[in-house]
Length: 205
Image (tube, rainbow, N blue to C red; front, top):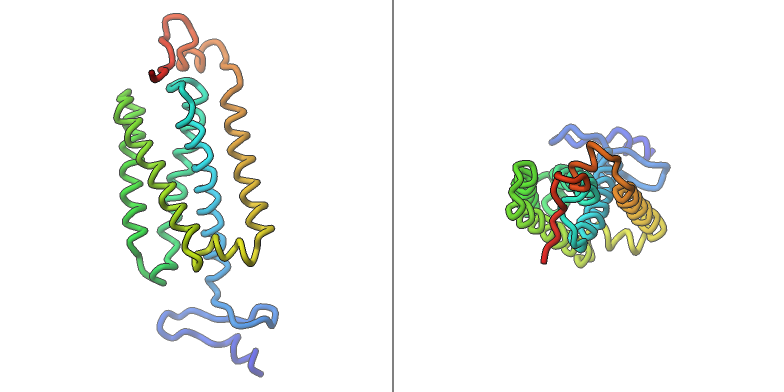
C-alpha cells in the first residue's frame, strides 16, 4: 500500500514524479539522469586533466602531437564546462558560484583557442595555462569536500570510480599515442614544421 502511494506521489510545486526503485526506497525521477551528467562531467574533467598536464610538461610547442592533444583537450574542456551547468548540487535547482567559475573558464578557454587560431602564441599559452589551472582548482574543490560526489564514490562505490578513472586515463593515453605517430609527408608534416621551409616547432628556452 505504501509503495503504491509512493509511486503516485507528485511534487505539486514542480510537477515532478517520485517513484519506488525496486522496493529499496523513494527516489526522485531525475536522480538517474543527474548521475549520468555527473559521470560525463567527471570523465571529461579527468581526460582534460591528463591531456592538459601532458601538453604543459612537453618542451615542444606547436608540433603535431601538441595540436592533436590540444584539440581533444579543448573538446573535453568545453564538455566539462557546459555539463557543469546541469549540475546544481550546491544550491539545488539554482546556479551557484561554481557556475560563475565555469562561465569565466569558458571565456578564458575561448580566448586561448582564438590565440592559437590567429597565431598569437603568448595569448594562447597564457590563457590555456590559466584555464588548466582553473580546472585543477575545481578538481581540488570536488575532492577535498567530503559531501561532494567524488569523496562519496570513494567510500560507497570505489570499484566503479576506479574503473571509470582507468578508462579515462586509457582514453587519454590512446590520444597521446595517436598524436605521436609519425606525420605523413605533406599536410600534417608541413603544418607541424617537419617539411623544409615550413618552419620549426617552438621549443621554449
